Amino acid sequence: MSREAARSGEEATQVYRRLLGYVRPYSRMFAVSILAMLAFAVTEPLFAAMMQPLIDGSFVDRNEEVVRLMPFLLVALFVVRGIAGFANTYCLSWVGRRVVADLRQQMFEHLLRAPTRYYDNQGSGHILAKLTYNVENVATAATSAVTTIIRDGFTVIGLMAYMLYLNAALSAIFLVIGPVMAGAVKYATKRFRRHSRRIQDRVGALTQVAQEAIDAHRVVKAFGGQVREARRFSAINEKTRSLQMKMIATEAASVPLVQLISAVAIAVIVYLSTMQGLKENISVGTFMSFVVAMGLLLPPVKRLTSVNAHLQRGIIAAQSLFELLDSEEERDRGCRTLDRAAGRIDYRGVTHAYSADKPAAIRDLDLTIEQGERVALVGRSGSGKSTVASLLPRFYDATAGEIRIDGILIRELTLASLRAQISLVSQDVVLFNDTIANNIAYGRADPPTREELRRVAASAHALDFIEALPAGFETRVGDRGVLLSGGQRQRLAIARAMFKDAPILILDEATSALDTESERHIQAALQELMANRTTLMIAHRLSTIENADRILVMEAGRLVEQGRHAELLALDGYYARLHRLQFHEATVRPVETAG
Image (cartoon, rainbow, N blue to C red):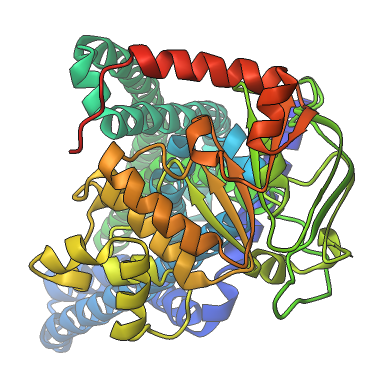
C-alpha cells in the first residue's frame, strides 16, 4: 500500500470516527438500533437452519410433530424479523436525522461567527452546498451505510459460521476468495473517494452560478444575458453529470464483479457438495440448508459491496463540513464591556491590507473624531473610505496600529459590546423576509411596542407608506425586501438604526438609492438620527455631506485633506476637483424625478 493511500485511509477513518462522535448524545437510541440489527441478522442463519428439520422431518422422515411445529416457527421468525427491521430502520434514521440537524445547526452558528474575510474568500454557492447537498450525503453515511455495514456484516458472519458448522471444508472456499473481493473493493474505494470530492466541488459551483443568475435576474434580462448564463450553467452541469456517471460506472462495475466472484465460489461449492453427497451420503435437508445459506449470503454481500460508494460520499462530505467547522472564527478575546459609549474615536497609525499579496487599503491613518462630531469620508473609489468604516466594528482587524473608543482599545471590548455601540446604514440595504416590524426591531430580544415602531418610522419618514399597506407593520417585505421600492427599503434601514439608538453611527452611501423627493425627506430624518451621535459618513455624492462638521478626503489609502466644505473648496485641492467634477456632471445630467 502506498503512503498516499495509507494516509488517505487513515484520514477517512479519523473523519468517520469524528462523525460517529455526533452519535454519542443519542447512544441509547443507537444501542437499540444495534440490538435490532443483531436480532435481524440472526434471523438469516436461523431461517437456513430451519430448512434441515423442515425437509428431513417433513418430506423424508414424515415426522408429524415437525410438520405441525414448523409453520408456527416460520411465522414467529418473520414476526421477529419484521419488528427488528422496523426498530433498526426507525431508530437509526432518528439518530441520523438528529446528527444531520446538529451538524447543520453547528455549521450555521459557526458561519454566524465566521470573520468577514471568510465570506470574501468563499462563494455563497459553495457554502450553501455544504449546508444542503453535502450534509445529506453525511446523513446517508450515518444511517443507511451503518445499517448495511452492521446488519449485513453480522448476517454474513452468521451465515458463514452456520456453513462452517455444516461443512467446514466447503465453507473454506469463501475464505479463499476473500482477498480477491477485498482487492476489488479497495480499487473501487479509491475511485469513489476521488470522484465524490470532485462532484461536491462541482455542486458548489453549480449552486453558485444558479444563485448569481437568480439574484441578478433583472440584470440578466435587461442585458440579454440569458444565453450566456444558460451556457455557464450547462458547462458546469455537464461536468457534474460526467463525474456522476463515472461514479455510477465504478459502482455498476464493482458490484457485479464481486457478485461474480461470489457466484463462482458458490458454483464450486455446489459441485463439490454434490460429489460429496454421492460419496458421504449427506442428508437432503443438510444439503438444502447449506444451499439456502449460500443463497441468503448473496444479497448482503451485494449490499456490502454497493454501500462503499455511499460511505465514501459521506466521508468526503464530512471532510468538507469539518473543514468549515474547523475554519477560524472571529477573534473575540476582549473582556471589557461598555454600557453606552460617549463616542470619541481614535485611529492611531492604522494600516490595513486585505491580504498579503495586495497593497494596503489604508496606510498610517491618524484620526480623531470627537464625541458627537459628524465626519464625512470622501474620495475616489478604492481610496480606503469603506475600509476605515469597516475596521471600527471589527469586520476586519487592522493589520497595524490601534483603534480606540473613549480611550479603550476596541480589541479589549467584547464584540457584542463593541457592536452594540454602533448602528449601520449602508447602500446595499439588507432586509429579511419577515415583517416590517421585525426588520425595524432586528436584533432586539423583546418585542417592540407599537408606539416605539410608530415613533422611529415617523422619524425615518416611513410611517406614511407603512400605514398605507394593508397589513401595516405586519407586512412581509419579501426576499431582501423585493416587495418594497428602493427608497422604502432605505427608510426602513434608517428606522432600524434609529430603533437601535447606538451612540456611534456609520452611514455608508445611505442616500444613494433615493430619488430626489425621498432624499429631501431622508436628509431631514438623518439630521435627527445624527443628533447627539458620533457619525461617520461615507459618500460619493458630495452634496449630501456639505453640512458635515468635518470632511476627510482619502486618496490611495491616505488622508490628504480635511476641513469643512467651504475651507476645502478654498484650498482648491483634491476635494475641490471632486466637487467640480460632480457639479459638472450634475449640470449635464437629466433632472431626476420622484418615483
